[in-house]
Length: 221
Image 1: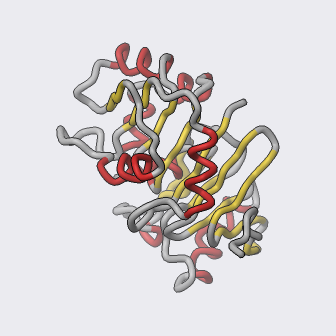
Image 2 (image 1 turned 180 degrees about the horizontal axis):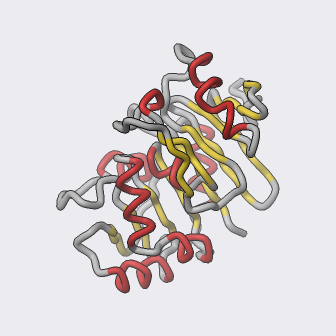
C-alpha cells in the first residue's frame, strides 16, 4: 500500500492525530532518504523535519540526503532502497528543477516507500502546481509546472490562506478547472492511501473556481 503525506509546516511538532497516524504508517525504519529543498546549496537541511519525526519516536538505521553533491545514479539507488522518502521544505522551483535534472520522479512514483513532503516538497509531489509571485515564488510570470505526480491533483501548502482567500481562488481558478487543488496553511496535513484521503487541520479544496473547507477526518474531542 503506497501512503503519501502532503504536509504544511509545523511550529514544533506534528499535531497529535497526525503524528499518531504517521507513527502507525511508518513501520519499516531502515532507510530514510531526504530530497533537499535547497539542492544547489551545499549545506544540511531537514533539521526541522527530522525533529518532527524524532518527537514521534521515529528513528532510522540509515539517513541519506540527496542534493547536487550526490551523483544521479547514487541518488536513484538510494530511492530504490528507501523505507521512507521525505521531500523537504525549501525553494519549490529549485527543488522541482533538481527532480527533473536528476530524473527522480519516476523512482519516487515506483517506490513502495511511505512518501512525505513538507511545504515545497508537498507542492512538488503534485501532478501540477502553479508557480506565481502572488503565491510566494520569486518569478516575473506565472507558470504551471509538472510535479512528481503521486496523485491526479495539485497542492498549495504552507500558505496564508485565511487572509488571502479571494486572491488564492483567482490565482488557482484556471488550474482548478483541470484538477482538484488541496490548499492548506501551517500545522496541516493530507494523508492519501489507495482511494482514501484523510484531512488534518484546516484544508480547503479548490475545484472549478470554488473553495470548500474540508472536514477533518479525526475531530478533537
